[in-house]
Image 1 (cartoon, rainbow, N blue to C red):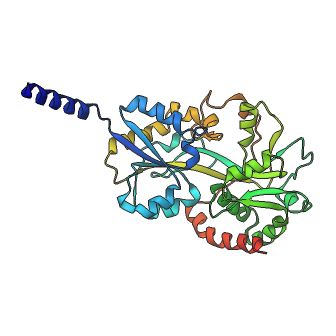
Image 2 (cartoon, rainbow, N blue to C red; image 1 turned 180 degrees about the vertical axis):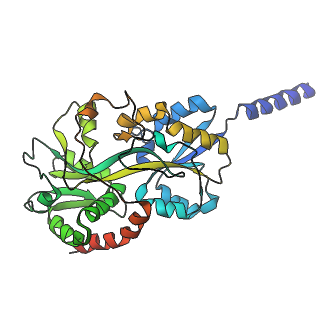
Image 3 (cartoon, one colour; image 1 turned 30 degrees about the vertical axis):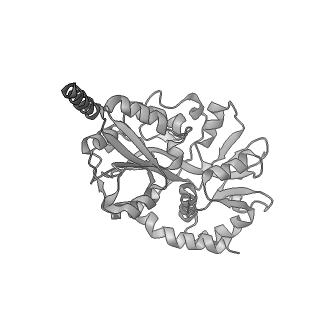
Length: 327
């Protein structure tokens, strides 16, 4: 009897080890892993191909990586933006992604072999056509609009869209950026830590316009059958924003990490982006964009800084922004 019990215990332990799946740990922003973000569907899709357990760890991706360094548990990160890539690259933590950039359908050239885009959009001010019949038709019109126009924006120190706007203003106005911020500041009802707080103020009718993206109206068109939300398109151009994925050089699951990078540009993953992330996929093919996206206007000019230029401009541009809003 004792021998039988020992053998049974050994068999159970062996079976448990055999059944244990390898874990791929992916650091991602909070929004990505939420029930309304693309994470849950991506987790299900990748796990169907990998015989593994995909574990998302949500939070501020870059600050966590900077804190952990080469002790990080991450195998892959997703959700970094180009405006912080110089700091991310300087860590030396990342490996080449191994993908063909020629497959990407971005409005800017992309030849980076480390950071792989998975989506993109452009910053814009979104408004309700039933509440604002004559929205500003240019950035200059926005600056010269009456101070009774109320806008919500995001803090560039805590928000990727807020940082993108900082660089948008710099790209449009250059050395005149302080003057532009001084004109805009009286119209800004509030500066929120993140995008969701600002957008909530807009949908609640507390502000006339909100800093968001050219693709934001697609959500209202497709999910709510509401065509009253629109992005104001400016001839000065709109700032390009992409989110990327990257593989950690020190991962203990290199094959799984490489497989995930393959999955990022797969039809399955890219086909989820439009309505999972409410942005353009990094690889657009027939059927990837629902009909509601066809109604979205595109700017004639896409503004873009390289990661080196974005990093060099970030602190001076932030100082200009702080000077305008500290008054």
